[in-house]
Image 1: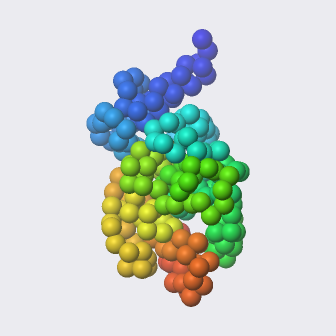
Image 2 (image 1 turned 180 degrees about the vertical axis):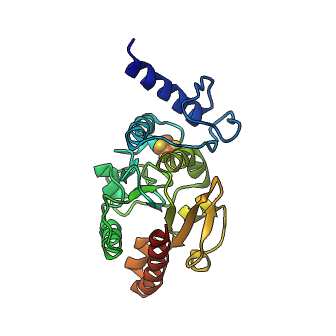
Image 3 (image 1 turned 60 degrees about the horizontal axis):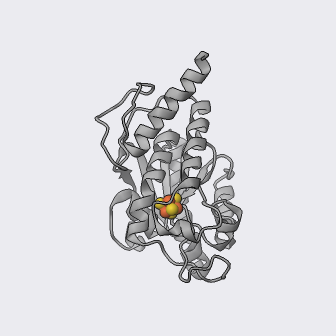
Length: 248
Ligand code: SF4
């Protein structure tokens, strides 16, 4: 077996350990603290290259595509893992895929996604420069028929708890400087703060698993489509993010 194959196998085993808590850590990445058994993701010092990040994300994406950890797998058409720059300084996190995302397997591609793209462009960035994902990777539906329109619902607590380890792992791999949480569900998932988004936006939090990563909550683009009067608040939040990004 040549060195490249051995290296790939070692990385795979390390990732399995990270995601599922199984035995087999081979010391590819230096650990910051003890690994926990179960689905809880531990924090570790990630000092890998962009090539490694691409590989780890691809592997995690495969696991999401095979996931049956919650009932949403029974009605999904395509899981929506996330997309963008694997080495992004800025991540945008929404709550869950909707009808269009379920069809395309891509995050934020419906009307709310178009608005998010405009917001990103107004920040003088592109979708390719940031990373976009959701707390939950499969489409939550009210009636178990993925072909019905206007059938979206928010993910349940149980679905969020089952899926969150995937997002936590994405964050650990990408190591962004800032995460912009779009809406209350993403904000609660990453800050453990259970307050209305109107009270949380405009503030800066630290990610509970890695205090070097800042969290800036704002309104979900869907909320802006329903109520355009929220746009100035969102732009204020984006300016806060740009200020932090420029100071890095
Ligand atoms: S929503 Fe998440 S936990 Fe549930 S089946 Fe999809 S990937 Fe698995």
